[in-house]
View 1: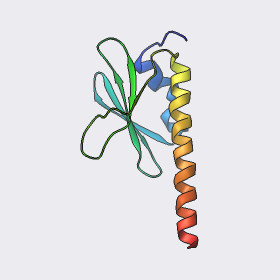
View 2 (view 1 turned 45 degrees about the vertical axis):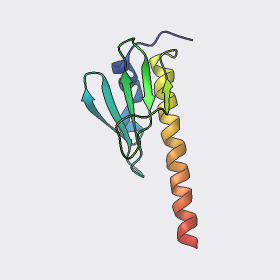
View 3 (view 1 turned 135 degrees about the horizontal axis):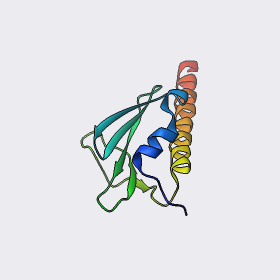
View 4 (view 1 turned 90 degrees about the horizontal axis):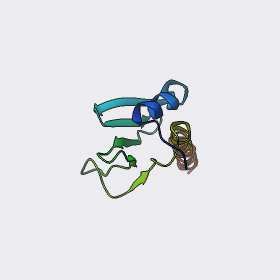
Length: 103
């Protein structure tokens, strides 16, 4: 457990250009982080109690119950977790399309 430096520090540590991600600011407390390959995206939100929440959207709404609280991790660890999640997504997505094209 470590002190998180906040949402801005996580975004800075994520270095989106180096990780093939796009980041857009939804509002002061919410960023949308998207994968350049495959179109997946997540929300990174700073809650009123300073919780830093990574949530996975539903197609019919902005937020759902599928979320992870990253508040207990420092900004570098939170950014690394987000980057690794998108890396795994890209690998699975690429593998899926490769297998589908072989069929």
